[in-house]
Structures are given as structure tokens and as C-alpha cells.
Length: 220
Image (cartoon, rainbow, N blue to C red; front, side, top):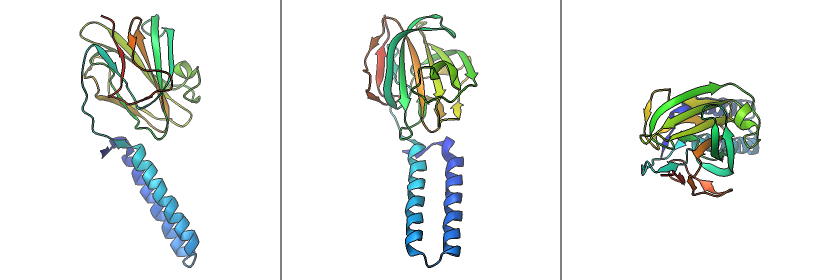
């Protein structure tokens, strides 16, 4: 387990805030023992929250071109047939994973291959489980095509609290299954659009883990 690079600034600000707050309490209320202990406990809790949010666990990814790995930790909130209108423009099976503030917020490539399409969309900050968040919220859209020519589209979607989407890829990059492609801060959602005929291996409400859980098996 390590601390993710996206959390360095947040951790530094957290430590600075804790230091200033505790120094101020010590200076202005040196005899207020109860107040000081309350502040100590709250400071420790804040520090733990920041550290656990930006934790980066070590993973051994079992790569397989026939499967689609979950791109994020969280809970499956959508499994439905829909029409993808931005790039693929055909019917797909959509699976959506909601990431709560307590989840690891690293995003991982569901398949390996070449990134055929990438686009960042500014937008709203509806709650991540809102039906329109997939098309109206701030988001990125990424399409990766594997060596068999199968294309998978997936999106990072900002939520009401998550107002910073980070990505590490661009069009034309060659990526490996399970590698990090981005990060979203403080609660969010990831959508993935699979070919019809894919064998879905998860259920609504199931808790899933990025880079570990097999979402689906691709059709032959």
C-alpha cells in the first residue's frame, strides 16, 4: 500500500491546516483541555480520511484479452442495454460503477490495446447516480481497441463532490489491461459500454474492485 501522487497537495494542505488549528488552540486556549482533545481527535480523523482516500494498493493483474476488468472500486449501479451516441453509435451493454468517498479512486484500463478516441467534456456536477450524469456531467470519454479489433468505451464522470478528473492517457497510446489511466477525487462514477453478446459476470448492487473484478467476458 502506498500513497497516490494525486494526494500530495491535499495531504500537505491537510497537515498545514492541522498545524495552524492546533497552534491557534494552544495559543488562545492553553487551559481548555477538553477543547484541545476534541481538536486533536478531529485532526487525527481528518488526517486518516485523507490518507485512506488517496491510498494506492499494490495489485497483481491477471491480464486476459477475452475478459473486461472493472475500471474502478465501488458498487454496480447500472446494467442495461443502451445506445452509445458519442463515438460507437450502436447498441451496447452499459455497466456503471459508483465510487463512494471511502473507495480507492484510481481508475484502471478495462482492456489492453490502442486508445482510438479520447475527449474531455466540461459539464455539470449532478450526483453521480443521476441518470443524466453520464451525458451532462464533467467527464472524459475513452475508447480502447484490443488486438482482436474489439472496442470498449468507458467514461470517468464527476459527481457532486468529485470536481477534479485526472487522466494519464491520450489518443494513440498503447495501454495495458489493469494499468492506471486516471483518478477522480471525492466520489464519482465510471461507465463502461460493452459489445452485445458479452457475458456479464456481475450483478446490480455488487461490490467490485478495480483491476481485479471481471465485469464481463467478450463475445468470440
